[in-house]
Length: 168
Image (spheres, rainbow, N blue to C red):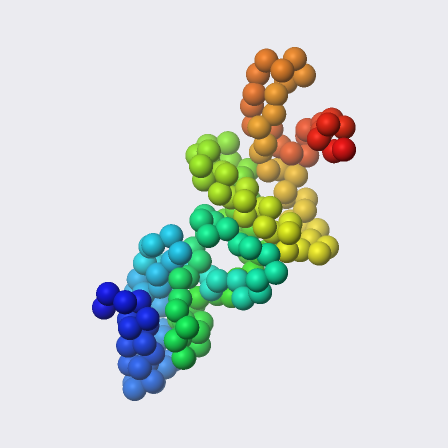
């Protein structure tokens, strides 16, 4: 079906007709979840997450993480949850997606910038933060220049000196 709501309504209807759990287990192996990035993903092959439910912080729409693009269809959340779509959880997204991108010197600059927007959103949404994640965030590579200002390179954030111009 062209319309994703029609597609998902059909899946829910079919699931209700034959028994939801067994169908959801089969569905997990099929590329049945459309992501915000436009990809179809099988939950058994790639972890995919529901969109963030709270809207206290704007989550970047182009986050380099498989976030489901799901319409409001009765029964869909339960069906996709049973199939393996996971709830949005910053800790897991940071640990498994964003931090590996941000600590890898070979990450493409555009992808690095998208991941950095995700890191900023994480900080905006967390009151205290997660201590193990906080320690790993020190390894995020930032563009830095040498003291002489003649060479720029990616360096771990925890190893950088920030002048009062940066820190206020």
